[in-house]
Image (tube, rainbow over all chains, first blue to last red; front, side, top):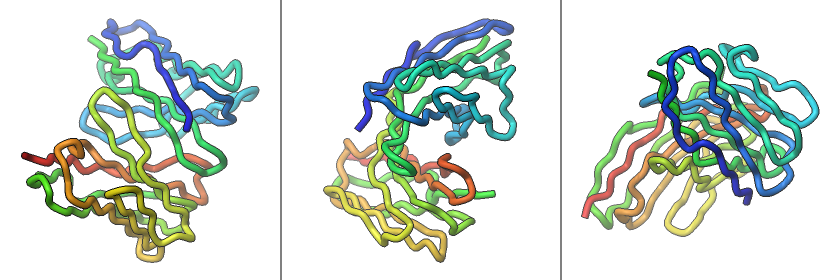
Length: 114
Length: 113
């Protein structure tokens, strides 16, 4: 199974600023996923990041708000731009162990926007 | 659009009791279904994965079943322990949705001494 770390684990940010979340995997993976979990809600997929190509965003999420980088097969970043209190959530990255196989999740980044 | 629902939303049981968590999904065209547990501040842990061709999977005290045609899955936890207290999430990978997971609403389980 993959071991995934995220930085930061939590942060408190001011409205209008941006935060970049890092996701590091201990093995090479093709696809990485970014999810958001709003307070009291389940997880919603933001985008899928493949190395060497543009991220694919789900309906309701746009690149200007959530730019993603995927410079290699073990690392990805998600930036939450121009933050508002509605962006307060837990952000999680995940990877897939093979095609349509188990997904493994990082510990998440708890973001609070004031 | 795939929708996943879990019942009950919350459950409190005494230690030692056997329990069943329920998951239903609206579109039976799935590749697989996964059960996760979520502990506060610790992300998600994958518990079981059932392929669409399978009927059940077992891991220790956990047994998950899948009835794809009716759009239902159950997670059976035997001899519950306080350490089982967590939120349990089911998620499906739909055939028309790439590799993305659609998550259920979760069941918050508390096992009391």
